[in-house]
Image (cartoon, rainbow, N blue to C red; front, side, top):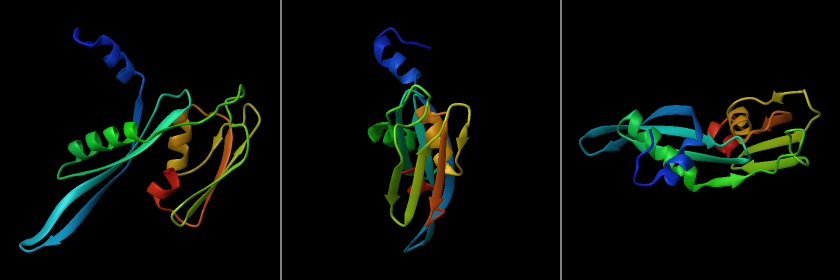
Length: 144
């Protein structure tokens, strides 16, 4: 539902799709015992080449997801997409101990990726790609 105050801003917000990759319960030991909170990992994208990964922490899941969406919009990157809905060249990425190999494929091959990499690629609008994650199964590092 669009408000009358700023319809342009609301239309920009409507184009983003978001997927929650992981919600984990984390605890912190404090003087009085343990303080429990939730960490949410969210990927947002417009399926036109822009995608962002966000992390949010809060005492309840709903606020953690909201914070993660705001963080994801703050960390947007643009991925070049070819006419075959793939990427132009092979990419080797690294974040922490996680290494990710991403390679373009021919039209019709689909997204061959696992874990959080699949979510990132689908929300970026890539439909023909091959990927391999090596070194770590950490969802956050693989998504980055």
